[in-house]
Length: 257
Ligand code: 13P
Image 1 (tube, rainbow, N blue to C red):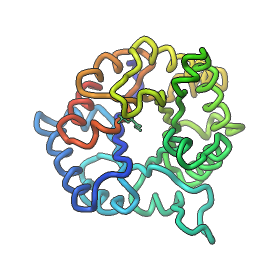
Image 2 (image 1 turned 90 degrees about the horizontal axis):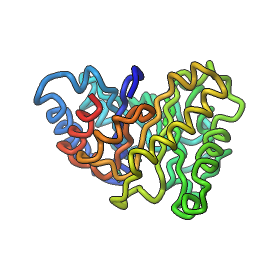
Image 3 (image 1 turned 90 degrees about the vertical axis):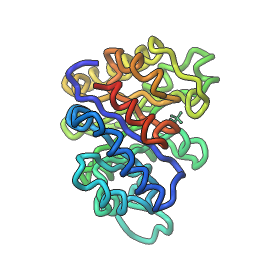
């Protein structure tokens, strides 16, 4: 890790009722502060609950410095779009971040790189920090195409947006074959992927490359987090399964200190 401020984000996916979500948020704050304020002071911590729990979790965490993220967003701000949630509504519910382009959305809901680009524009219009996910499938990795796939996804997501408008950008590298499988990329493989993503950002703009935080996601657990986070281009983690327990998520946050 470098002088980029570490960021550890929890993606709760489709889990937790209102009561469970508030309880987990409170337990998490307790677990993060049981040995002092260092974790909250030195790591940006972000939680992405389901939409229906956002406002309540926001209220529960409002004094803590823990930030809130949407798991997805629609590209338009309002209108006749039944079932969608927009960037201004996420901001209204207390979000300051939003995940876009998660592989589960690409896989199950047909999201495309162009769609991710339009979501990114919507987030920037409303000053929400985008967490843009990229990742290759096992088939693509085995064919030797991993780097080309993830750099292409990032390139198309960013499109022609000016680097100056991307100063808060967060990228998450999540190899699809490592998500929820217990199979993690080796630290060296993850570092290589992160370095390729950073090189792409540097090619767009030196400052964008130097400042953008690139998170690793895919079966991050307390026992592998430190090794991954020790790599120079891995600036944090996007955690699924292990974020559903306060103790294990807090341990991963501490590994980023
Ligand atoms: P797991 O940590 O459960 O593998 O999920 C990773 C992920 O998809 C986070 O967005």
